[in-house]
Image 1: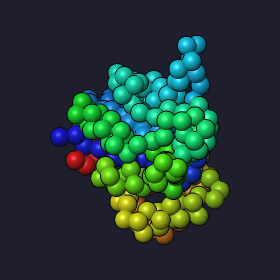
Image 2: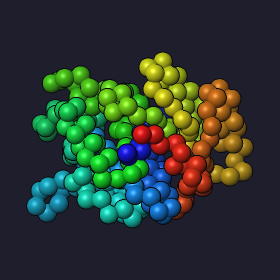
Image 3: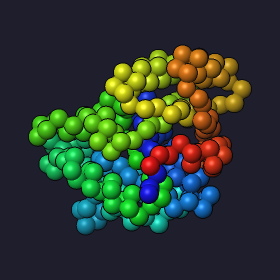
Length: 228
C-alpha cells in the first residue's frame, strides 16, 4: 500500500515547490518508487498549441528525475497567477473534490511514496463558487499528515506559529518543518528556528540553503514520515 504525505507552506513564494522537488529527489535516489501530486496549479504558461504547461510538475519532475507523466501529476492547471478558486472563476473548470481524489488514488496505485503539494499556504480556497473547498478539506478527505515549508528569514516566527496553531486547531497532523533560504551562521535565522522549535514543539527536519541540490536529511528518516 502506498505511503503519502502533504506539503504545505507558511505562505505563497516560500519555496514550497523547490523543497518538495528535493524531497521527491531524495526518495527517488534512495531507490524508492516516488510520485508527485498537486490538486491545482496556478500561474502557468501555454505551449505553442495553447495547452497549459503544469509548471510546478515540470519543475519537480526535472529536479527529482522521476518518470511520472505530467498529466498524472495535477488535474487542474490554470493560467492566472492567483488562488485556484479565482483562477477557475476567470477560466472555468472549477475544482471538484471527487476528481482530485480519483487522481490521487490513481497515483497512489502506481507509486509507493506519494508527495502531495498544496497551493499557497494552509488557508487556501481551492473552489468557492460552485462549492466551498478549502485546502484543509482536501487534506482531510485524503487522510494526510503534513510537513510545513517556511522561509528562514525575518517574520518566520509569526508565520510558522500561526500556521501550526491553525493546523492544530483544525486537527491537521503536522510532523515537522523544513526551513528554506537558510544561511548558516546567520544569527537571526538560527534564532528564528530555535524559537519556532520552542513555541511549536515541532522538529526541524532540514535547513535548505540557497541553491541546494540535495536535501540534508537521511532518506530513511524522511521515508518514515510517510503514512499509509
